[in-house]
Image 1 (cartoon, rainbow, N blue to C red):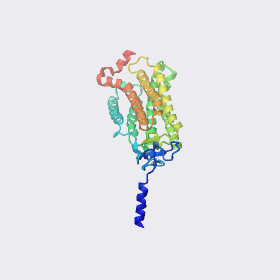
Image 2 (image 1 turned 90 degrees about the vertical axis):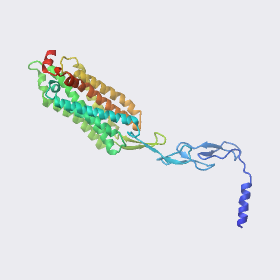
Image 3 (image 1 turned 30 degrees about the vertical axis):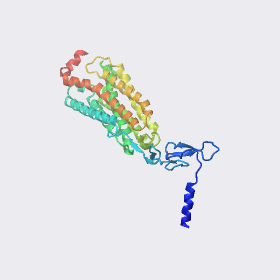
Image 4 (image 1 turned 180 degrees about the horizontal axis):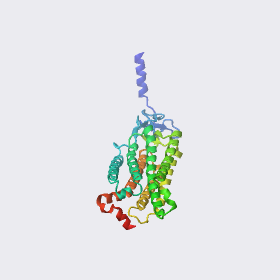
Length: 355
């Protein structure tokens, strides 16, 4: 009986089979070519995300969400994870290096101002606010590192809220400096109504109010719909994009909008008083710094909306770096130049002579 079965199998293999095309290889499937002959069919490659590991396969099989076909579409392989990383992305390494250098520069400027805190150029326009501004710029540079590396829920929340609050503190400080300049020139006449608005208490209250509004916006945002880690498996073939979902879009753009509003007010006020005569008048420097700040963030929004994953994070990191560097360079570098290289100008007599 066994010998008879083997003989039948041999005879079956020897019987010629009708076909008008070659067998479909792995990675392909059969498709009807609308021919009258059943033995004629087309071989079409498997669709994107599908594999076939059988000859003359009737259909292709879809890979799981976390896997992707190899080049031959024969088997499923694991997708690669992608996020902004210094180990894999040269631009991330450059941004991290530049932020480290600028953080060191911020510390140098802060130390320089503390050391020369009794000189006229440091005392001018509220030295306490200058120190707060320098510290907030330093923290803004440091928060860049929250955007580099694999994001998780806590870093997604911290990266947006921290940069929003630190930047608002910086812009609020600039606004207080600008208002100080505006009021100072209006209060020069004896008995002026504006003198009562130049007190430290009033200016500090203004600074706290402007900063507290952003804290409330961020607190409401985190309580309603905070940012969280998200896996994007469909934007790029063969890749899983690990990114931060902003949660509440209204909360995110409210935070950016309020920060932009403060920057715009500072820019307008500083532009109005930029030509007032005074050796230590910061208005023209504030005008340039807010011009850089507003330009960077206006350009950042369309770029941010048109990118995904690590490129979205890179755009935001660049905006944080560029705007922080703009404020530091425009407002403080001219003062440091006078303190270090032109100390003869850092005297009150010089200010009086130029009025």
